[in-house]
Length: 271
Ligand SMILES: [Zn+2]
Ligand SMILES: [Zn+2]
Image 1: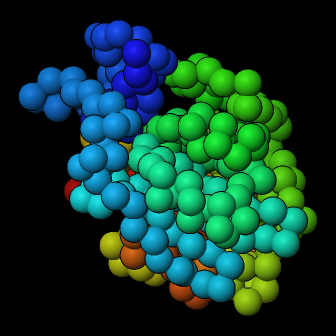
Image 2: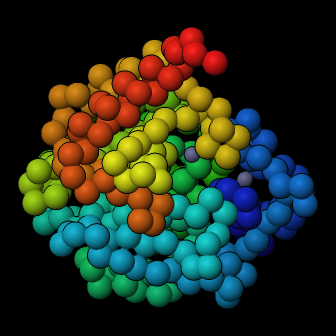
């Protein structure tokens, strides 16, 4: 038997002889099932046709993404810390090369994930390094393959290492989480934001949506709350979910200005 991975979102499902009939993550209105129907792939087939590519974003921050692009196409970020490495967000392909490179970099002490679209094969990354996976409890129903290494946390903040704090902002998912890294960007602070604060094509803007593929907005009150929750946090950079999507300077102001403009557009009476 083998686990099965949804080819549209990258979510993994338990070992069974046959793949499941549906992917609840893709059946949800925030995602979609393609016209061609629900597709599945096994880890062995994924590893045979794809590889992971690495990039260094700053001295202790690496990006890993799958090439050619697979499913949603997000990147995972590896934070290299003296207290142990942290993987932020996750991708479906965990092959032998990825495991060997991670071991050479010192392994993993913890995994933290912004929201269910990036849960993917977190169980396999965690088991290889016997490390916990920190997920917000508000999204617990979206775990499709349970694992004893998953630790659900409650509340609005969780410190997972010195200077590394998870902030639950909600929005795109009720448990939507970002990671604040105080020492990032040469100690000016960095926000690892997943889809919760989405770095836009104009790299001096961010946005906030309920559904990205189906282009459905969040309420003005929700966007205001997200911006308010981030106001006390100093950060210069924002590293978004996708390759090349990072705000390199003035990140905290970019969030406040983008949120204010979003609310203004929602509440505008102009046609
Ligand atoms: Zn799916
Ligand atoms: Zn998402």
